[in-house]
Image 1 (cartoon, rainbow, N blue to C red):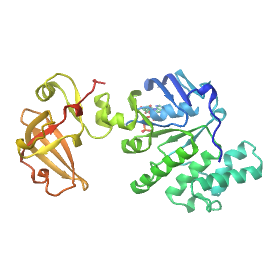
Image 2 (image 1 turned 90 degrees about the vertical axis):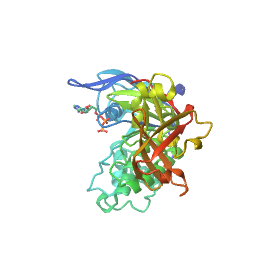
Image 3 (image 1 turned 135 degrees about the vertical axis):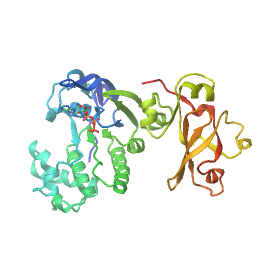
Image 4 (image 1 turned 180 degrees about the horizontal axis):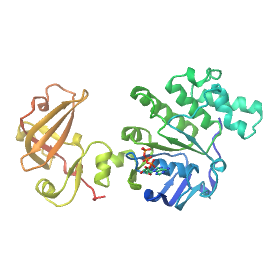
Length: 352
Ligand code: ATP
């Protein structure tokens, strides 16, 4: 399958400016600005109702913005109909036609565009092979597994060779194991084809695994746009710190007592070490706190402890279960413990 044509003048694949959408009195999307590069795997992550699907639907052309513009490859498409935009959408429910064969489903878009039959066949077969379903063209969707149906939906979008693929929770209907497998496949496919992916998910792990960059949405606004690593290591707001992974937020008295300065800070549970004996605190750990273990939760590969601090508040500590002899293993409920971490692992977050 050939790669899509490059965008004009090196313009971003998608440029969104001042995008707003009101449904009656509900502001679903509020002043969103985004530039998504060609070939980028870009995710919109956020809780239910935060506006990510509405942004995707406006890029697809299924909704029209209340204000703002959308450019694809440097061309303003804000007022264009969905079929005249160089994008294709893969929906969570796949939207396959049950009475058609897999091959007919994949060919459908080409038939609408009046592509000659022989070319349709070849391109549909190519697309099916791309998603490892080369042998399944004669089946009907009802005769496929959930993961295979998902791949057909993908093939049906890829057959049009769009420059941009819009994916709305495409793995949402799959069980966890299959979902993880498909995440790897989808990422690989995107890399091989060089197509720009705009991907909607509320699953932070999924977004972290697959994306080049992620926009975190909250109440119709973007809180932060960053690479998975930066989003995790340097969350810009308490919302991002709490939504992407588990985080401890220190503010008020706790910040002043533990860190010696006022403000709001985040520290990830795996950065904190737990010791039974204060003399075991490593010298490079500038931040220390004493407390009592309130809860210990065994998570298989790791153990999570919740520690109530002597001077108020609590912290979550996560420890990999690598060695059975670590001190943390004997720090059961009620144990008096010492927590410590490196100062640079306390990240300032501005109140969002
Ligand atoms: P989810 O993950 O649940 O799909 P989301 O982040 O994609 O959530 P949206 O579907 O974009 O969120 O919805 C944003 C807000 O807009 C919500 O408050 C929702 O109820 C509202 N909304 C979305 N579509 C419509 C519509 N057609 N009519 C009225 N309100 C709508």
